[in-house]
Length: 253
Image 1: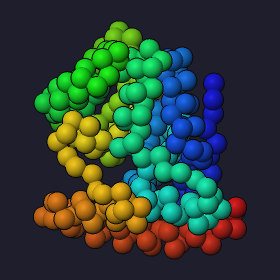
Image 2: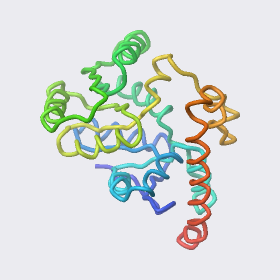
Image 3: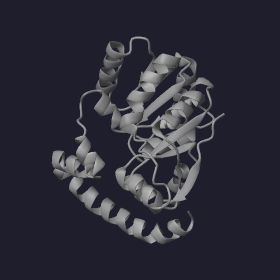
């Protein structure tokens, strides 16, 4: 079973390798029904991990913790890994769907509103008719009971799914995947807002903004009332963490 190389950066164990290397590993894990989970690490997740020790363990114990956000990627590139590629959830989702269709793997969609899941399934049937959607489940927003968690794991396993794509928001989806490791016999990926993007209910920043690490500006422009405080606090905290870890991480290269 492929093990993705990791590096200690920003106090976390972040994944190394190309985008295609990651997709190949996820497909291998899924095909083998290897119970595993993937975190896509951005500035928000980094700050959450440093504020809560138990969540830091969730991220560090993941089978892969990919450099999703451009600030995280740029940090890695400037501290010893200049060739590292971005492995973002918004790109993983369509690429893994295509590869799953080509390899005969089935996919389960977990989380998000039912209308979002329905829109995703409709697009999959249109664009990837060979791909089998093993099932969808839109869980209640409230915390799930132990019985409900067990029932959901059983439903996913009965479906025969190889790949489970999860959208519950950070840090809820990462905690869910960690709790399900060993219970769900598939590779689980926390993809958050990638569901909305694939469903056609959200838009992505232009590539030039993404390349300049300005995707957060685009999101802020779209939803200023909801996001201004989060970005002000989160981005400021991330900058502080980056400065704090910079010299130690450079010495560790």
